[in-house]
Amino acid sequence: MDDAIDRSTPAVAVLGCGGWGKNIVRTLRAIQPIPVIADPCDSGRATASELAPDAVVTGDPAVIFDDPAIDAVMIATPAETHFELARRAIEAGKDVFVEKPLTIDLDEARTLVDLAKRHGRVLMVGHLLEYHPAILKLHDLIKRGELGEVRYVISNRLNLGKVRTHENALWSFAPHDIAVILRLVGQDPTEIVATGGSYVSPGIADVTVTQLLFPKGVRSHVFVSWLHPFKEQRLVVVGSKKMASFDDVNKELVLYDQRVDLEEGQPVPVKGEGVAVEFDTETSPLEAEVRHFIERVIDRQPPRTHGASGVKVLEILHAAQESIGQGGGAISLVEERPIVEAKPEATHARV
Image 1 (cartoon, rainbow, N blue to C red):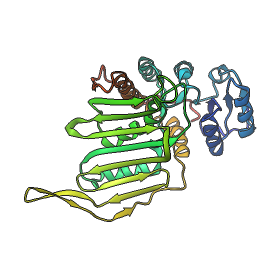
Image 2 (spheres, rainbow, N blue to C red):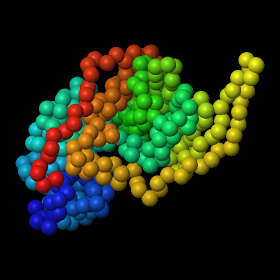
Image 3 (cartoon, rainbow, N blue to C red):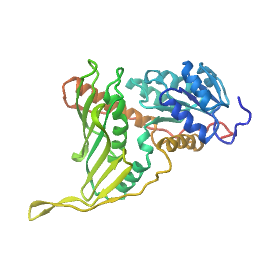
Image 4 (cartoon, helix red, strand yellow):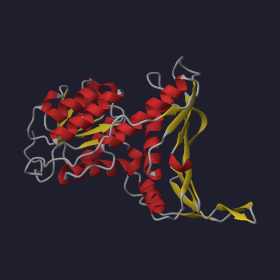
């Protein structure tokens, strides 16, 4: 362990330095030193040594779990490993960040939330878009009533590739959009309808459309595909007063003074000019997310994307997958039991 590490900040280790893990390592290392990085693959360890030459690099995660000097761990490993690694970390007294999805199995996700609560640990899920400055700005506009009542939300995440063969487009792309929609609408959906098409690999949906029905008639749909002729990442929120569009490809958030009024019982479209809304373009969503985790480890407050929110996204994903399997049948969401995110206990005295 490097004795030069500043002990006034929490010691945060990383599990996984592959496809997305290397981005977490790079971002965290720019903020503070990393004591240990663990990755079972030679390529991952080589990348870790290059990105964080002052870190201990190992193939054994127990090096992290068994070190009492490590306060927290960020997990960016394959989804099927999330539960076991997060469980071991929590039981070892570490605060835990887990890349999306929290787990694949819904019961395992609920177990992690309960485990973190019992051990007084921070449990945070990597729903990156919820840390995007434009999404935070849009959420603020909605809270201030600029758009009026939210009526429906459309999210398109489309591109040609990267085509997966181990998970479908719903599980690869939609978690981000679902998490953001839940945040913006401020309610949980009561019904899910989803359809999908498999064209490259049998049984792996390349294109899915998921519809969410919320209380009071609010609706949303999420369209994801890796078989699309151009890249589009656009979120549209339609309110009773105004409409908003966030184009993540071109980094543009536009507020439209557009609506439909009733005049003598007849609907009349009111069209206004779109006005660009400024937001922080200096801070990347990943940097904001990593800093948020570090802050929650320090102040012991529940993170924005806490474990319970990760469970809710998983519930919707499983319902959507069930609907796809039924050819688009409606799936009613009935909460089995409440999940309350408790305030974590104090961590090590030095934090």
